[in-house]
Length: 452
Image (cartoon, rainbow, N blue to C red; front, side, top):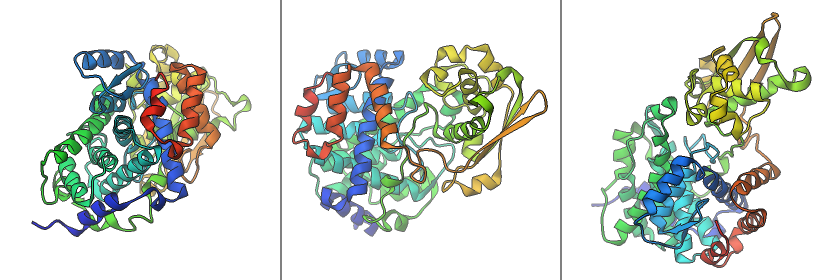
Protein backbone atom coordinates (compact mmCIF):
# COMPACT_ATOMS: atom_id res chain seq x y z
CA UNK A 1 0.00 0.00 0.00
CA UNK A 2 1.21 3.47 -0.88
CA UNK A 3 2.18 5.77 1.97
CA UNK A 4 0.86 9.35 2.34
CA UNK A 5 2.93 12.08 0.69
CA UNK A 6 3.61 13.94 3.95
CA UNK A 7 5.25 10.82 5.42
CA UNK A 8 7.37 10.39 2.30
CA UNK A 9 8.51 14.01 2.63
CA UNK A 10 9.43 13.53 6.29
CA UNK A 11 11.33 10.35 5.52
CA UNK A 12 13.21 11.92 2.60
CA UNK A 13 14.04 14.94 4.75
CA UNK A 14 15.54 12.73 7.47
CA UNK A 15 17.32 10.41 5.07
CA UNK A 16 18.90 13.12 2.91
CA UNK A 17 19.67 15.92 5.39
CA UNK A 18 23.28 16.84 6.15
CA UNK A 19 24.82 19.23 8.64
CA UNK A 20 25.22 21.80 5.86
CA UNK A 21 21.42 21.95 5.44
CA UNK A 22 20.81 23.03 9.05
CA UNK A 23 22.22 26.53 9.12
CA UNK A 24 24.22 28.28 11.83
CA UNK A 25 21.24 29.17 14.06
CA UNK A 26 20.01 25.57 14.19
CA UNK A 27 23.50 24.20 14.84
CA UNK A 28 24.07 26.65 17.69
CA UNK A 29 20.74 25.86 19.34
CA UNK A 30 21.11 22.07 19.06
CA UNK A 31 24.67 22.26 20.41
CA UNK A 32 23.32 24.05 23.48
CA UNK A 33 20.39 21.62 23.88
CA UNK A 34 22.84 18.70 24.04
CA UNK A 35 25.18 20.61 26.36
CA UNK A 36 22.35 21.72 28.63
CA UNK A 37 20.88 18.22 28.90
CA UNK A 38 23.97 16.33 30.12
CA UNK A 39 24.59 18.13 33.46
CA UNK A 40 20.82 18.30 34.05
CA UNK A 41 20.77 14.50 33.72
CA UNK A 42 23.79 14.05 35.98
CA UNK A 43 22.31 16.24 38.73
CA UNK A 44 18.97 14.41 38.52
CA UNK A 45 20.82 11.10 38.78
CA UNK A 46 21.73 12.01 42.38
CA UNK A 47 18.15 11.62 43.56
CA UNK A 48 17.74 8.59 45.85
CA UNK A 49 15.14 7.01 43.59
CA UNK A 50 17.42 7.32 40.57
CA UNK A 51 20.37 5.81 42.42
CA UNK A 52 18.18 2.87 43.39
CA UNK A 53 16.90 2.48 39.83
CA UNK A 54 20.42 2.49 38.39
CA UNK A 55 21.55 -0.24 40.78
CA UNK A 56 18.46 -2.35 40.21
CA UNK A 57 18.27 -1.93 36.46
CA UNK A 58 21.96 -2.47 35.75
CA UNK A 59 22.40 -5.37 38.17
CA UNK A 60 21.98 -7.96 35.45
CA UNK A 61 22.41 -5.73 32.38
CA UNK A 62 25.21 -6.13 29.86
CA UNK A 63 27.92 -3.48 30.01
CA UNK A 64 28.29 -1.13 27.06
CA UNK A 65 29.94 2.07 25.87
CA UNK A 66 27.24 4.57 26.84
CA UNK A 67 27.63 6.73 29.96
CA UNK A 68 24.97 6.73 32.64
CA UNK A 69 25.65 10.35 33.53
CA UNK A 70 26.27 11.09 37.17
CA UNK A 71 26.42 7.41 38.10
CA UNK A 72 29.94 6.64 36.88
CA UNK A 73 28.58 3.60 35.02
CA UNK A 74 28.55 2.42 31.40
CA UNK A 75 25.67 0.55 29.79
CA UNK A 76 24.20 -0.50 26.48
CA UNK A 77 22.59 2.45 24.65
CA UNK A 78 19.05 1.24 25.27
CA UNK A 79 19.64 1.10 29.04
CA UNK A 80 21.57 4.38 29.17
CA UNK A 81 18.78 6.10 27.21
CA UNK A 82 16.21 4.83 29.70
CA UNK A 83 18.15 5.90 32.80
CA UNK A 84 19.45 9.22 31.48
CA UNK A 85 16.06 10.19 30.09
CA UNK A 86 14.39 9.45 33.41
CA UNK A 87 16.95 11.40 35.44
CA UNK A 88 16.76 14.33 33.02
CA UNK A 89 13.30 15.49 34.09
CA UNK A 90 13.64 14.94 37.84
CA UNK A 91 14.82 18.46 38.71
CA UNK A 92 12.63 20.19 36.09
CA UNK A 93 15.60 21.96 34.52
CA UNK A 94 15.44 20.41 31.05
CA UNK A 95 14.94 22.37 27.83
CA UNK A 96 11.47 22.66 26.32
CA UNK A 97 9.42 24.14 23.49
CA UNK A 98 6.01 25.79 23.86
CA UNK A 99 5.29 25.47 20.13
CA UNK A 100 6.11 21.75 20.15
CA UNK A 101 3.97 21.59 23.31
CA UNK A 102 6.46 19.71 25.46
CA UNK A 103 10.11 18.87 26.06
CA UNK A 104 11.58 17.36 22.88
CA UNK A 105 15.25 17.65 23.86
CA UNK A 106 15.31 15.36 26.87
CA UNK A 107 13.38 12.74 24.93
CA UNK A 108 15.79 12.75 21.96
CA UNK A 109 19.23 13.59 23.42
CA UNK A 110 19.71 10.58 25.77
CA UNK A 111 19.13 8.01 23.01
CA UNK A 112 21.20 9.92 20.45
CA UNK A 113 24.13 10.49 22.80
CA UNK A 114 24.12 6.84 23.88
CA UNK A 115 24.07 5.46 20.33
CA UNK A 116 26.70 7.98 19.19
CA UNK A 117 29.00 6.60 21.88
CA UNK A 118 28.33 3.01 20.88
CA UNK A 119 29.00 3.68 17.18
CA UNK A 120 31.92 6.06 17.62
CA UNK A 121 29.99 8.60 15.56
CA UNK A 122 31.34 12.07 14.91
CA UNK A 123 30.06 15.01 16.89
CA UNK A 124 28.64 16.39 13.65
CA UNK A 125 26.64 13.19 13.14
CA UNK A 126 25.27 13.47 16.67
CA UNK A 127 24.30 17.10 16.20
CA UNK A 128 22.49 16.33 12.95
CA UNK A 129 20.66 13.34 14.43
CA UNK A 130 19.36 15.35 17.40
CA UNK A 131 18.27 18.21 15.13
CA UNK A 132 16.24 15.90 12.87
CA UNK A 133 14.66 13.83 15.64
CA UNK A 134 13.72 16.98 17.54
CA UNK A 135 12.34 18.80 14.51
CA UNK A 136 10.22 16.07 12.95
CA UNK A 137 8.68 14.84 16.20
CA UNK A 138 7.94 18.42 17.28
CA UNK A 139 6.20 19.16 13.99
CA UNK A 140 4.04 16.06 14.38
CA UNK A 141 2.98 17.06 17.88
CA UNK A 142 2.33 20.67 16.90
CA UNK A 143 0.00 19.53 14.12
CA UNK A 144 -2.28 17.70 16.58
CA UNK A 145 -4.65 19.01 19.22
CA UNK A 146 -3.65 16.47 21.87
CA UNK A 147 -6.03 16.09 24.80
CA UNK A 148 -5.08 18.22 27.81
CA UNK A 149 -5.25 15.11 30.03
CA UNK A 150 -2.32 13.59 28.13
CA UNK A 151 1.15 14.40 29.42
CA UNK A 152 3.33 15.15 26.35
CA UNK A 153 6.35 13.19 27.64
CA UNK A 154 6.64 9.61 26.40
CA UNK A 155 4.41 10.14 23.35
CA UNK A 156 5.88 11.97 20.35
CA UNK A 157 9.33 11.78 21.96
CA UNK A 158 9.53 8.10 20.96
CA UNK A 159 9.39 9.21 17.31
CA UNK A 160 12.11 11.81 17.88
CA UNK A 161 14.44 9.39 19.63
CA UNK A 162 13.85 6.75 16.97
CA UNK A 163 14.65 9.12 14.09
CA UNK A 164 17.82 10.33 15.81
CA UNK A 165 18.98 6.74 16.29
CA UNK A 166 18.01 5.85 12.72
CA UNK A 167 20.02 8.77 11.36
CA UNK A 168 23.09 7.73 13.36
CA UNK A 169 22.71 4.21 11.98
CA UNK A 170 22.54 5.48 8.41
CA UNK A 171 18.90 4.67 7.63
CA UNK A 172 17.86 5.71 4.13
CA UNK A 173 14.49 7.32 3.32
CA UNK A 174 12.70 3.98 2.98
CA UNK A 175 13.78 2.77 6.42
CA UNK A 176 13.12 6.20 7.91
CA UNK A 177 9.54 5.99 6.68
CA UNK A 178 9.11 2.57 8.25
CA UNK A 179 10.71 3.87 11.42
CA UNK A 180 8.24 6.74 11.69
CA UNK A 181 5.30 4.36 11.44
CA UNK A 182 6.77 1.81 13.84
CA UNK A 183 7.78 4.32 16.51
CA UNK A 184 4.53 6.31 16.44
CA UNK A 185 2.63 3.38 17.96
CA UNK A 186 5.17 2.80 20.75
CA UNK A 187 4.33 5.78 22.98
CA UNK A 188 2.73 5.60 26.42
CA UNK A 189 -0.72 6.46 27.74
CA UNK A 190 0.67 9.29 29.84
CA UNK A 191 -1.33 11.29 32.38
CA UNK A 192 -0.95 15.01 33.08
CA UNK A 193 -2.49 14.37 36.50
CA UNK A 194 0.92 13.07 37.60
CA UNK A 195 2.07 16.70 37.70
CA UNK A 196 -0.81 17.82 39.87
CA UNK A 197 -0.35 14.86 42.23
CA UNK A 198 3.45 15.16 42.35
CA UNK A 199 3.71 11.54 41.17
CA UNK A 200 7.31 10.71 40.28
CA UNK A 201 6.29 7.90 37.90
CA UNK A 202 5.98 10.78 35.45
CA UNK A 203 9.78 10.91 35.15
CA UNK A 204 9.94 7.51 33.45
CA UNK A 205 7.99 8.95 30.52
CA UNK A 206 11.05 10.63 29.01
CA UNK A 207 13.15 7.56 29.76
CA UNK A 208 10.53 5.55 27.90
CA UNK A 209 10.96 7.78 24.84
CA UNK A 210 14.68 7.03 24.64
CA UNK A 211 14.28 3.35 25.40
CA UNK A 212 11.43 2.70 22.97
CA UNK A 213 12.90 4.96 20.30
CA UNK A 214 16.07 2.87 20.40
CA UNK A 215 13.97 -0.30 20.32
CA UNK A 216 11.96 0.98 17.34
CA UNK A 217 15.16 1.37 15.30
CA UNK A 218 16.16 -2.15 16.30
CA UNK A 219 12.78 -3.49 15.18
CA UNK A 220 13.11 -1.88 11.76
CA UNK A 221 16.62 -3.30 11.41
CA UNK A 222 15.09 -6.72 12.10
CA UNK A 223 12.38 -6.31 9.46
CA UNK A 224 9.38 -5.23 11.57
CA UNK A 225 6.84 -3.02 9.81
CA UNK A 226 4.38 -0.33 10.83
CA UNK A 227 0.95 0.80 9.70
CA UNK A 228 0.44 2.65 6.45
CA UNK A 229 0.00 5.93 8.36
CA UNK A 230 0.32 5.39 12.10
CA UNK A 231 0.89 9.11 12.74
CA UNK A 232 -2.63 9.95 11.57
CA UNK A 233 -4.03 7.01 13.53
CA UNK A 234 -2.37 7.98 16.81
CA UNK A 235 -2.48 11.77 16.53
CA UNK A 236 -5.77 12.04 14.64
CA UNK A 237 -7.90 9.47 16.45
CA UNK A 238 -6.33 8.34 19.75
CA UNK A 239 -4.31 11.07 21.47
CA UNK A 240 -6.12 13.75 19.52
CA UNK A 241 -9.11 14.00 17.22
CA UNK A 242 -7.57 16.75 15.11
CA UNK A 243 -4.42 16.28 13.06
CA UNK A 244 -3.21 18.33 10.07
CA UNK A 245 -0.66 16.41 7.97
CA UNK A 246 -0.05 19.43 5.72
CA UNK A 247 1.09 21.46 8.71
CA UNK A 248 3.71 18.85 9.57
CA UNK A 249 5.64 19.43 6.35
CA UNK A 250 4.81 23.10 5.72
CA UNK A 251 8.11 25.05 5.46
CA UNK A 252 10.03 21.88 6.33
CA UNK A 253 13.72 22.70 6.18
CA UNK A 254 13.22 26.47 6.25
CA UNK A 255 11.25 26.93 9.50
CA UNK A 256 12.93 25.15 12.41
CA UNK A 257 10.92 24.65 15.61
CA UNK A 258 14.13 23.81 17.44
CA UNK A 259 15.17 27.48 17.23
CA UNK A 260 11.98 28.41 19.13
CA UNK A 261 12.85 26.36 22.21
CA UNK A 262 13.56 27.65 25.72
CA UNK A 263 16.07 26.88 28.45
CA UNK A 264 15.22 26.81 32.15
CA UNK A 265 17.02 28.40 35.08
CA UNK A 266 14.33 27.65 37.69
CA UNK A 267 13.81 24.01 38.83
CA UNK A 268 10.05 24.06 38.21
CA UNK A 269 7.49 23.20 35.57
CA UNK A 270 7.64 25.68 32.70
CA UNK A 271 4.35 27.41 33.40
CA UNK A 272 5.54 28.25 36.91
CA UNK A 273 8.39 30.25 35.35
CA UNK A 274 5.96 32.83 33.99
CA UNK A 275 4.65 33.45 37.50
CA UNK A 276 8.18 33.61 38.93
CA UNK A 277 9.03 36.23 36.31
CA UNK A 278 6.02 38.29 37.38
CA UNK A 279 7.14 37.96 41.02
CA UNK A 280 10.65 39.10 40.10
CA UNK A 281 9.14 42.10 38.32
CA UNK A 282 7.15 42.88 41.48
CA UNK A 283 10.16 42.51 43.79
CA UNK A 284 12.30 44.74 41.57
CA UNK A 285 9.93 47.60 42.46
CA UNK A 286 10.08 46.96 46.22
CA UNK A 287 12.77 48.66 48.34
CA UNK A 288 15.48 46.10 49.06
CA UNK A 289 13.87 43.62 46.67
CA UNK A 290 12.23 41.63 49.49
CA UNK A 291 8.77 41.23 51.01
CA UNK A 292 8.26 40.17 54.62
CA UNK A 293 6.12 37.01 54.30
CA UNK A 294 4.44 37.75 57.64
CA UNK A 295 3.23 41.11 56.32
CA UNK A 296 1.58 39.64 53.19
CA UNK A 297 -2.18 39.27 53.54
CA UNK A 298 -2.52 37.45 50.21
CA UNK A 299 -1.04 37.04 46.74
CA UNK A 300 -3.51 37.31 43.84
CA UNK A 301 -2.33 35.75 40.58
CA UNK A 302 -4.03 35.92 37.16
CA UNK A 303 -2.51 33.57 34.58
CA UNK A 304 -3.08 31.67 31.34
CA UNK A 305 -4.80 28.29 31.68
CA UNK A 306 -1.78 25.96 31.87
CA UNK A 307 -0.22 28.04 34.64
CA UNK A 308 -3.55 28.45 36.43
CA UNK A 309 -3.91 24.66 36.63
CA UNK A 310 -0.91 24.44 38.98
CA UNK A 311 -2.73 25.62 42.08
CA UNK A 312 -1.97 22.95 44.69
CA UNK A 313 -1.47 24.67 48.07
CA UNK A 314 -0.74 21.66 50.29
CA UNK A 315 2.48 20.37 48.76
CA UNK A 316 3.81 17.19 50.37
CA UNK A 317 6.94 16.35 48.34
CA UNK A 318 9.90 18.05 46.71
CA UNK A 319 8.78 16.81 43.29
CA UNK A 320 5.26 18.10 43.83
CA UNK A 321 6.70 21.47 44.85
CA UNK A 322 8.00 21.95 41.31
CA UNK A 323 4.44 22.02 39.92
CA UNK A 324 2.76 24.32 42.42
CA UNK A 325 2.52 28.04 41.75
CA UNK A 326 1.51 28.82 45.37
CA UNK A 327 4.48 26.88 46.73
CA UNK A 328 6.94 28.44 44.28
CA UNK A 329 5.88 31.98 45.14
CA UNK A 330 5.91 31.30 48.87
CA UNK A 331 9.26 29.53 48.88
CA UNK A 332 11.01 32.18 46.78
CA UNK A 333 9.67 34.97 48.98
CA UNK A 334 10.68 33.16 52.19
CA UNK A 335 14.13 32.12 50.91
CA UNK A 336 14.83 35.31 49.00
CA UNK A 337 15.75 33.50 45.78
CA UNK A 338 14.90 30.65 43.42
CA UNK A 339 17.29 27.72 43.70
CA UNK A 340 17.29 23.94 44.07
CA UNK A 341 17.15 24.48 47.84
CA UNK A 342 13.91 26.45 47.44
CA UNK A 343 12.20 23.24 46.29
CA UNK A 344 13.89 20.55 48.38
CA UNK A 345 12.46 18.54 51.28
CA UNK A 346 13.46 21.14 53.88
CA UNK A 347 11.60 23.84 51.94
CA UNK A 348 8.52 21.61 51.79
CA UNK A 349 8.76 21.13 55.57
CA UNK A 350 9.15 24.87 56.24
CA UNK A 351 6.00 26.10 58.06
CA UNK A 352 6.52 29.69 56.85
CA UNK A 353 6.48 28.52 53.23
CA UNK A 354 3.43 26.34 53.76
CA UNK A 355 1.54 29.11 55.53
CA UNK A 356 2.21 31.67 52.81
CA UNK A 357 1.32 29.19 50.03
CA UNK A 358 -2.16 28.94 51.49
CA UNK A 359 -2.58 32.70 51.02
CA UNK A 360 -2.05 32.54 47.25
CA UNK A 361 -5.17 32.91 45.11
CA UNK A 362 -4.56 31.72 41.54
CA UNK A 363 -7.09 31.92 38.71
CA UNK A 364 -7.23 31.80 34.94
CA UNK A 365 -7.66 34.96 32.91
CA UNK A 366 -9.20 33.78 29.63
CA UNK A 367 -7.83 36.78 27.77
CA UNK A 368 -4.35 35.66 28.86
CA UNK A 369 -5.06 32.11 27.65
CA UNK A 370 -6.05 33.49 24.24
CA UNK A 371 -2.59 35.09 23.91
CA UNK A 372 -0.76 31.80 24.62
CA UNK A 373 1.66 30.41 23.34
CA UNK A 374 2.97 33.51 21.54
CA UNK A 375 2.82 35.25 24.92
CA UNK A 376 2.59 33.83 28.44
CA UNK A 377 0.92 36.64 30.40
CA UNK A 378 0.75 36.69 34.20
CA UNK A 379 -0.13 39.41 36.69
CA UNK A 380 0.64 39.09 40.39
CA UNK A 381 -0.59 41.42 43.13
CA UNK A 382 0.69 41.34 46.70
CA UNK A 383 -1.84 42.73 49.14
CA UNK A 384 -0.11 43.67 52.38
CA UNK A 385 -1.64 43.67 55.86
CA UNK A 386 -1.33 47.46 56.04
CA UNK A 387 -3.49 47.81 52.92
CA UNK A 388 -0.68 48.66 50.51
CA UNK A 389 -0.23 46.67 47.29
CA UNK A 390 2.60 45.73 44.95
CA UNK A 391 2.13 44.47 41.39
CA UNK A 392 4.28 42.60 38.88
CA UNK A 393 3.80 41.33 35.34
CA UNK A 394 5.12 38.85 32.83
CA UNK A 395 4.33 38.99 29.12
CA UNK A 396 6.98 36.70 27.66
CA UNK A 397 8.72 34.20 29.95
CA UNK A 398 12.49 34.48 30.32
CA UNK A 399 14.27 31.92 28.18
CA UNK A 400 11.84 32.11 25.26
CA UNK A 401 13.36 33.13 21.90
CA UNK A 402 11.88 36.61 22.26
CA UNK A 403 13.50 36.96 25.70
CA UNK A 404 16.46 34.56 25.67
CA UNK A 405 18.91 33.69 28.38
CA UNK A 406 22.48 34.65 27.56
CA UNK A 407 25.26 32.17 26.82
CA UNK A 408 26.77 33.27 30.14
CA UNK A 409 23.52 32.29 31.93
CA UNK A 410 23.55 28.86 30.34
CA UNK A 411 27.25 28.36 30.97
CA UNK A 412 26.77 29.24 34.63
CA UNK A 413 23.99 26.66 34.88
CA UNK A 414 26.21 24.03 33.21
CA UNK A 415 29.01 24.51 35.72
CA UNK A 416 26.75 24.82 38.78
CA UNK A 417 25.09 21.49 37.99
CA UNK A 418 28.20 19.81 36.63
CA UNK A 419 30.34 20.62 39.64
CA UNK A 420 27.68 19.17 41.93
CA UNK A 421 28.64 15.80 40.41
CA UNK A 422 32.08 16.01 38.76
CA UNK A 423 35.28 17.87 39.58
CA UNK A 424 35.97 21.20 37.92
CA UNK A 425 38.51 19.95 35.32
CA UNK A 426 36.13 17.23 34.14
CA UNK A 427 33.26 19.70 33.90
CA UNK A 428 35.45 22.16 32.00
CA UNK A 429 36.69 19.54 29.53
CA UNK A 430 33.16 18.33 28.89
CA UNK A 431 31.91 21.88 28.35
CA UNK A 432 34.75 22.81 26.01
CA UNK A 433 34.19 19.70 23.91
CA UNK A 434 30.42 20.17 23.65
CA UNK A 435 30.85 23.79 22.62
CA UNK A 436 32.83 22.49 19.62
CA UNK A 437 30.72 19.36 19.17
CA UNK A 438 30.80 19.31 15.37
CA UNK A 439 34.64 19.18 15.53
CA UNK A 440 34.73 15.94 17.56
CA UNK A 441 35.92 13.11 15.29
CA UNK A 442 34.89 10.23 17.54
CA UNK A 443 32.30 10.84 20.24
CA UNK A 444 32.99 7.54 21.96
CA UNK A 445 36.68 8.40 22.37
CA UNK A 446 35.89 11.89 23.62
CA UNK A 447 33.44 10.69 26.24
CA UNK A 448 35.66 7.73 27.18
CA UNK A 449 38.36 10.12 28.41
CA UNK A 450 35.99 11.54 31.04
CA UNK A 451 34.71 9.95 34.26
CA UNK A 452 31.05 10.87 33.99
